[in-house]
Image 1 (tube, one colour):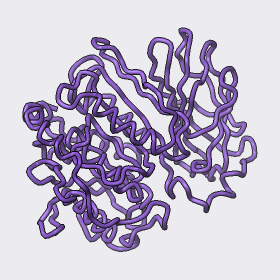
Image 2 (tube, rainbow, N blue to C red; image 1 turned 135 degrees about the horizontal axis):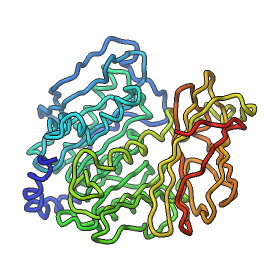
Image 3 (cartoon, rainbow, N blue to C red; image 1 turned 30 degrees about the horizontal axis):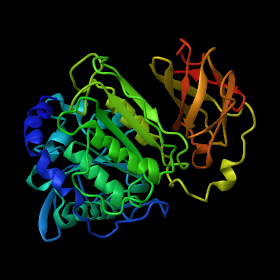
Length: 429
């Protein structure tokens, strides 16, 4: 993380200049559409690209990027894609290598988590001109378009599982991608970002996660809130003043907005700290940060096929017979004062696909659900039944989905003691 600290002074000195670029219009061609056939042209073919640095001509410029294929790449497997943008003064190599924290922080810590979860992600780190993302005349967005086309033609990628994320100036570029390419990318994560690279369009829904420090003296948290609120509006979420930790608390609060269109969540993670993508609640920053896990949970909640797929309508409304599937449930609680969020991961440990599910659990006394995401919840307290929504009714063998809710509590912020899925008692991770 020392590499991140070394660029903060340069970022602070130059941020006023780059804020002036916020109104730049973006150009370029759309690289594809979410919800169409998921497989790219590269599926079933020997990979046309290998891990390492590559050069591509985009808009008459030679642009470079670093590609990181998962171990034992399989050309018949449709992989998730994550595009990691560097910060002002950073490089593609910083993102790919993880800097001084090495592998543990590669791609903001997501590569390590992907490797631990069946190696399902292709990572790519593009290099910005002048080590930034000013995007003059839309050149950086065109670079992204050309990059996606190159990857699609040479590798096997699920076109409904493209994601982007970045810190600081990279967060601004991630926001520009969300504004202009919501039909190409499924969701983005903006770490301590601002509108620095433009926002062409900015009217379509896309999954959005913002992470920002309350004491950020480079890009104030108000700038991050502004990015978030664009997609609170676009995604049809219920507006709210998301809770944020107090200065000196050394804590973070993750808010999952309620009321959002199915498949288009908005998450806001505020922390007591400054301009960094890797805050640690006990103080300082580094690869042991909580942001990697929260970003990974956010990105992996999206099922392949897109949020509006009509090919699974029949199966997602068919409930499996009670007790026909083995299951495992993990629950991560983030609590504060009299509130909490609960992120529940359901894993199908059986040998057949679960088509339509209901998860039953009993909340500890004093807990009441106020909002939820990726499932419907009834009632709000006591014994609760969470049921799938349209886009996540199927859980393949050895696959997992994540759902969750926000709740109030009167002192007991613990997780439920047990869970049953379609009448079958699950093991608890």
